[in-house]
Length: 257
Image 1 (cartoon, rainbow, N blue to C red):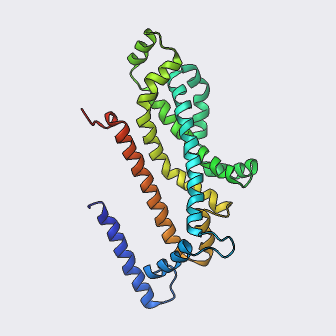
Image 2: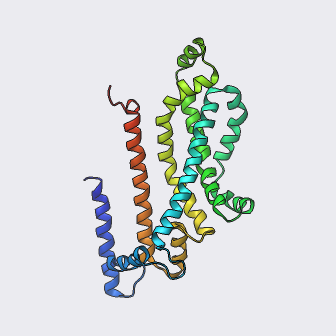
Image 3: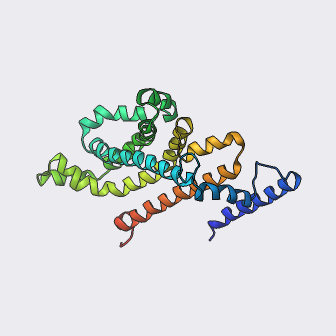
């Protein structure tokens, strides 16, 4: 309830400002009233587009979620596989650690033109931007976490005859899973930024595409609901990941001790 108070305060302030602006100028587009936003969104949500026959709002949402899911999924797979190898195997860490660090510090948006030139303007470039943007950071996080595991655990496993592969799977992987979910939660924000950026530059469907398409008309009655929807999707994803982590790995959250 306390967490909802700032949000309610922002809504009240917005409504007061919107009412004040519309009292001076009924045609104001900068701060639309809730009725105008509801009317615009009703058409996008429930009325098929005359050209494509699609429900635009849901088509945009599905396209963006597919791109985001692919990007985060590939990045997560790379983080757990490469991160484990970097954290457990010193030769791998010495060879590829500087490369991962170098890629991680490059602003991904700067690579966007390169990705579009190399991969075209299709889905591959959009997903690729998300992967380039979040995978190196996730890999570094997992590698650092695995590297900080008690050395005694690894020595004991090796003493019992475990190979490097078994150490990664049986010792490091179970302890890295909660950290992996945490890394996914931290990567969701940047992933949305890279997705919206890619859709704004080269796309014909998607939440980011729609926002940048209607901005030329100052259609804040569409932009604001879309931004609120993106925020709601992001919060929902974060809550699901947090719940999954506590449910699957209670020991990592101090539950049961």
